[in-house]
Length: 285
Image 1 (cartoon, rainbow, N blue to C red):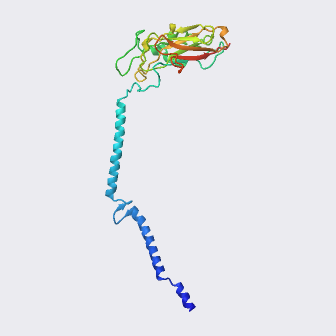
Image 2 (image 1 turned 180 degrees about the vertical axis):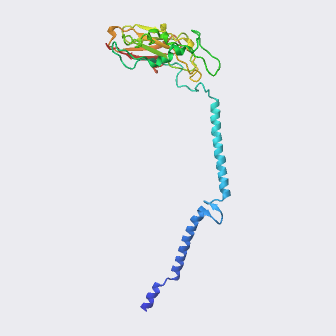
Image 3 (image 1 turned 90 degrees about the vertical axis):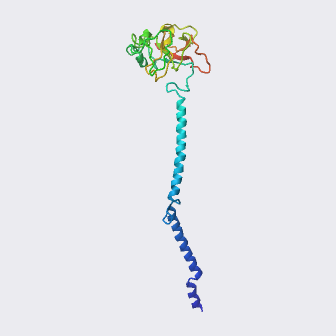
């Protein structure tokens, strides 16, 4: 009785056989479903879509993204029609320009010779003779054209501060020259007779000498039409020679230069660089 029972327990039942068969079928279906997902040979589907389905969806995205690209190109083209290739639509420089001083970055002791200022080399007479002679005291208004003419500003106009007779620009003798120029602003036409006026911030006045005389900024150098239309343009310079005495040596001198005689603003407390510039000079004995 016990032996028959033990043999019967080792034989699989019908229910166990059915479960094993169903398990094998599920595994076969699972394996087949993954293969069919990538490519179903019965229906010809690739990744779940037929060739016609793939063609339609690719056509849709082609038209959709083509429309977006066309809209983008159209908006860029419309925007470019409103721009001037020679004048920026929005300028970060105000209508009233600031001044820019050209000075030696180092201090020079008495009798030590300073190097020539390289930034004034473009004002050499040999280079400026290629530019045009303009009417003094008159704006150089020009008609539409590809290239605008440029008025001459010869370096020799600065005389003692030109670096030609004295390559130290006055530093060797303790009477330094400071060269001041206005920032470029496209279309600017200063009213009146603009000139540079400098004052020392101290109790007693400081004697100065200007080149050109009276620190004049002639109208013929205005308006400026931009780098593309006037590639050789140079703005007018004003050289200020500080006539320091021996009593002024070893003392830091604070000098402020302003654009006077014009409608250009030079007293805006919110912008201390509009129409003016301040610098410090110290001559060591």
